[in-house]
Length: 313
Image (cartoon, rainbow, N blue to C red):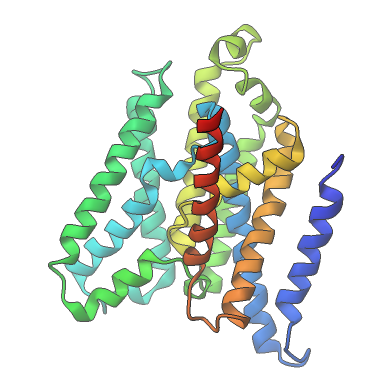
């Protein structure tokens, strides 16, 4: 397909219209407003996932890696569990969605600062050291969560379970407005380096030879990616495999390495995936499953297929 956007964006528009107006009278503003709110959440999450995954893969020079390997999602669940143990399920951290979002985002961004700025200076040529440490910390966070789950009151376990599975329903309008503002600031910050993303894919040596301050640009990109991942995770919780699925489909249909094209395609692919999954949850599955179950099932199967293809090569 010469220009996949000719097909993708009309599909996104049709799915959006179907999602918002399906089986609801135009006079029912309450339901329409609620659906539009969920659409805004999906747009923010899709934009964050598309940019974070593609640029992260460019920096790592590996198309099967995602920012999820850095342990953000496991840290998010561990943080929710720690707050539950320290303050209880009736505390303001669980009653106020804005406060919960701000605290979760702040902790994950602080984690990113320690990980990137603390380690990247001493390992300028080895980003895989950071990936390895992030993977180990993710395992540590996950193991700590499993241990602490055994110590909590069974009546409070529902709070932890809600944090472990993605749900658009947990997002308030105030949280969305705050997340939108933060993401606009992050994208404005990252837009200054949009012209060098294609050069980063050539590797550190070639980028330096072409006059790009590779270490400085990569450090700033990683910081922006960490904030985007923190915001998306704090909004709906863990979605592990969605980035791999989105990037894989993007590179298959784009047939190019140009980021200005791939980022738009990735956003459209992610929107199609998210809207379709949420539509099925609401109208076909009657809320019996949540977003992370469908997304991780599809993304996990795709990841296995991708690994098998790489092994055959």
